[in-house]
Length: 199
Image 1 (cartoon, rainbow, N blue to C red):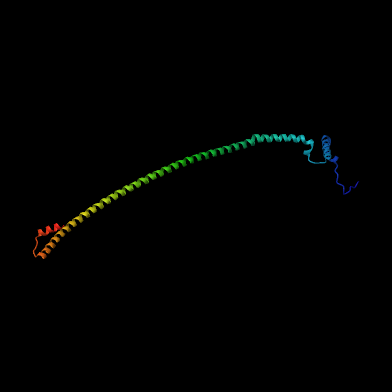
Image 2: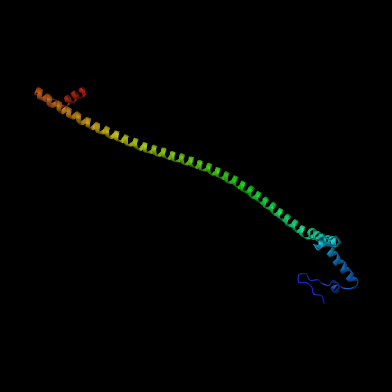
């Protein structure tokens, strides 16, 4: 019995573990190819490319069918719905803007009409107040003129009464002076004639 060194790596008996028959030959060829290639990634080995390309085409076809029949139509439908929603919102905004502009024009016309009406009302009120003031002033002037006429008539009566009294006083004074100077009493007719002549 041979004794192996402790530094040497353990070895495996490949012939004992390998299967026999046709499968054994394929397995032996694979292990020989693996030992010949020195290990590495099997997907980079040329012998596996046919299967990889086959499955790549199948996966590509499945993904193409899924994208073209399922995912892309959904995305297109969502995009179309979004575009329709945006277009509807824009159209509604334009309609609202147009309605707001129309309402603004109507409000502006109503404001102008209200201003014109207020100006006309103010002018009519001013004219009415002016007419009322003029009528009141005319009435007050007529009352004042009537009072002035009454006062002038009263003054005339008072003046006439005063003048009558003055004539009597003048006649009496003249009679007294004549009697004082001449010693003779003058008659009332003579004194009245003398006073009227002096006036």
